[in-house]
Image 1 (spheres, rainbow, N blue to C red):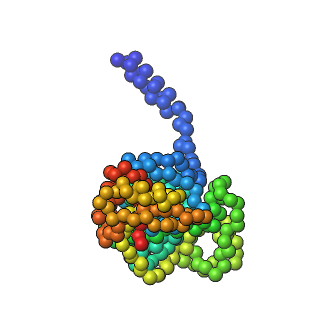
Image 2 (tube, rainbow, N blue to C red):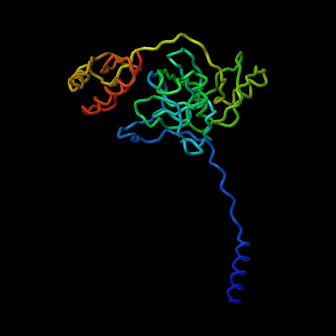
Image 3 (cartoon, rainbow, N blue to C red):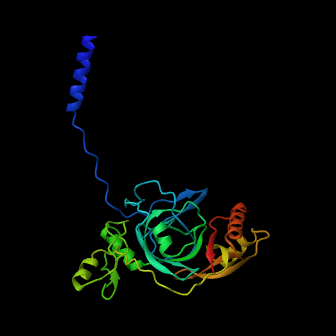
Length: 289
């Protein structure tokens, strides 16, 4: 018994001499595009967009469990931030609540939402500032700020190395580290501050701009056909749905889309989108027109 106690004492003493390594510091934020991935059985394909202007449905982030985002930023529910299923990370976008006309700039730094029928998920802070309803999705427009995004990505070693837009004549909100937000106090930028801000293209003003509400009916759209014939052929697969083909601008040429609707509520649009998938047609989106 005495020998066992002696051995136990030696083990405890030696264990106290073990030098524990300190935890590794977190990785810095990075530029991320990523491979295609599946969400609820559907394939989504992120890419680095030069232009991005979409309408659709947005939700509020309520179940973020990781302390960091997909590009290694700190997740903060009070940040002016959002999730996108396809945009490069990070990206700066203008989000407009089409139901009340209010808009603001936010930083996209995470993949999501989990529902492929939604174009964006925003933090509770952004939802509060833009007047999102307490439950259910809201109609939005999401527009990429291409120049600010490219300048931001260049600071992370990616994207075209271009000078950030001039900062004169605007107000800015200090948001702290990427992904963090201050209490919402704005300040006028002095010329000296403008020079500093020009080196931080990810800085956001935190201001909400008022505009005219533009709610509209919802449609399910299958985009991207190079020929009207191909769009018509897909449309014929959608038995019983109110579908038609429409021309859409595809950057440098006219493409053709299959548009289904209109629908006056989200549940009907969701049901039509699900029917398209059951008919074997991939890539249906919900848009606002």
